[in-house]
Length: 494
Ligand code: ADP
Ligand code: MG
Image (cartoon, rainbow, N blue to C red; front, top):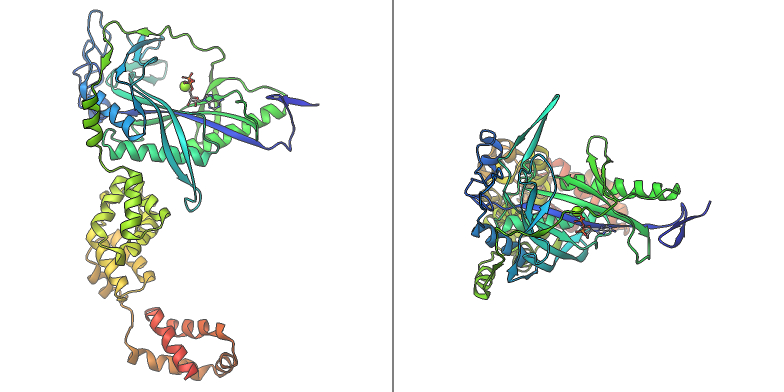
């Protein structure tokens, strides 16, 4: 059987590439909702009594009038500026009509033509050591209101409108990502930006930052786009990556079996690691968009945009580059540390200069991150303090302890907290840098291994590792390794 796809003959040996475009909904952390006075922050939306955080605007009562929240516009412009968008000075809200119980007006106020921000981009880095980089286009970023929540019970469902009218920006990318790794890097970078800007609380569990992934495949080298499916509302970066991988492989099998991919919305089940069909989306949905007559087009003055541009904080890429320059970090370490504002601030408090900065970066991105990840903790929720890492950096730098011992100290601090010098003292981790203490140990090892000594002297330089290793063992790992090596060489050659 010969199978045609996108005008090409394909079979099991065809190399396919994945094409991904992401739509990310970012909840803006304004105090009140986008078109009403009702409170909007997380606790008012999820923890307060059901349907309490509402006004007649949120519940869609006839005659109620929306009025635009200035702060929401400000935050949305900041997101546009930080993602290199063109800010449209004139912007229009439209009604997007559809029926769903958690949207009582029968339409969602969104933007279609003249969205607030257009034609931006993000630079991403990915790969084992962050060795790949790529620029991903952002088509548009528009403002819209969130819907309420339908809560399902056995036999019936109830609607909670506390979230209805929460301000969102939807960030729509170009279909320019080619792997789950690129998609993951894009999401992490966008997440870093909106949390650096402090326009989003960034709570993934609460759905503050949710992603729809559009996925299609095509034979590598093809310039046409295949039929896409859209995977809805995955709220963990890792799960988005897995869902994309699963979906690309599913589509490959559909095509190779002679079927066609159906344009549809799919859901991802993280337990089964599968996507399954939710609803077909073959025809473009007819939302009967039209400009909302209750909300006149709004115009932003140059001076207003310029002021917001000047007020932007240092963003992740700039901070990363500064850390590379100022602290001498590798691009990879600097990228890891600046991927989280919390971690970056912590690091900056701990590191002083190029002397200790790399050791501290190493401990933070290695041992400390591993412990924090396992415990599901942010560094600010842990027992770690910047001063501890400053002290550790100094202790490694002046050779009081080895880097291996420093990792041990990090483990102890994670569990018990405390002062670095006391921990080093108590755990007996001080390096022996005292030549008079090391000398007899080395002498003893040389005396006990005459064969190795002869081989070394005959030119087998590699054996230096053996002697240093033996001596290190004899000191319980506490000898200063460079000093030890220096002394062993001197003894053997001398
Ligand atoms: P809709 O609003 O119906 O989802 P859009 O045209 O706004 O449709 O596209 C949404 C997203 O889908 C964008 O991020 C875009 O890059 C992506 N996309 C469009 N076509 C494809 C395709 N063939 N494969 C993968 N992604 C696509
Ligand atoms: Mg979509």
